[in-house]
Length: 362
Ligand code: KG4
Ligand code: ZN
Image 1 (cartoon, rainbow, N blue to C red):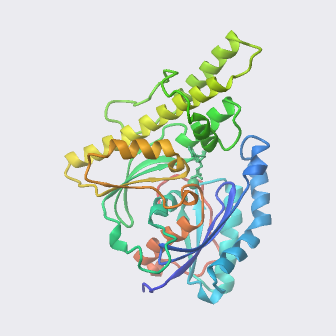
Image 2 (cartoon, helix red, strand yellow; image 1 turned 90 degrees about the horizontal axis):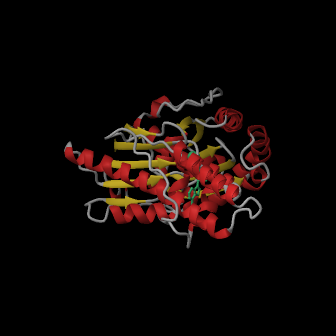
Image 3 (cartoon, rainbow, N blue to C red; image 1 turned 180 degrees about the vertical axis):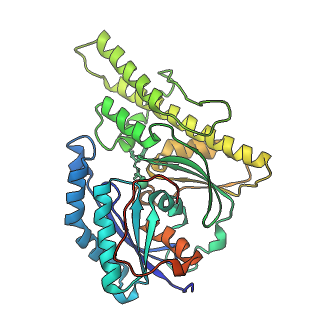
């Protein structure tokens, strides 16, 4: 039975953030605590799975305690436990799923496994606004067209309602965030690449380099960013061959960052709009367009999408807080609430949950 004021404790450890959150009724974030490992992985220029897993082991209990304390909740107040079941780094996922299973068993709470991408989808349903009911359910209008754009995944999703999803397009090679990370590495900008490139791109000339935009076959809503990454690498090689001793001057890095970012943003927004127009042609009246995932923090992506959709009768949303774009546990608790509400009997106290790296949706 659906309970009013249901509080779900979410746990997310799929990659390099150890995160726990308490969310009420799938929308109101009572606490969201994230222990980032960015400083550790910056030393190696990317995530080393073994190192990430060890950090999760050290952080998970302190993060859990802080999430409960900040939400002013005891275990008795928590109605269910939600955890990311995958996809992600298997050794990182295990720390979250084992922790969740033990709590579920010991505290006698239902356990709700959540697909990581479904979590990102629900990031736009979250609010930190105080007072239950200040963001009523009917504020969000279905059907919704969603672009999930992260380091590990990249999809265009039609959401007709809770639990009713169709994948319209996905990446055939690198996800957009991965392309940001790899290009940042090529340019010597460190890890994570997305924020570093978007910072460098400010004031850079977006048209300085003619970089490819891969639209694939006519009508395809899939993505491919590996060719763009290679094109950036070739520009860097060309420059270093011409001026071997000079390194990469700041203006070159700024212009290449801006040109690369523009190419990614163009393809992402054009495909999303193509999906919207295709649906309109088939008389599916999309009410909202959402951006979700780490790359949805990118201000140029937000700006271009807002501009290109100006003439449409559609509400464009981004996660309320930048912290809900990148990995967090509030979105996992939010998605878990929708799953539970649809099928409460499916979720029981459990001592056994198997993490998965499968990308099969939801
Ligand atoms: O959703 P997320 O935290 O993790 C995955 O599920 O993969 O996304 C992380 C990705 C990284 O590739 C990071 O470089 C990218 O999101 N990112 C950005 C920005 N902030 C994070 N990409 C572009 N612009 C940003 N401002
Ligand atoms: Zn993610």
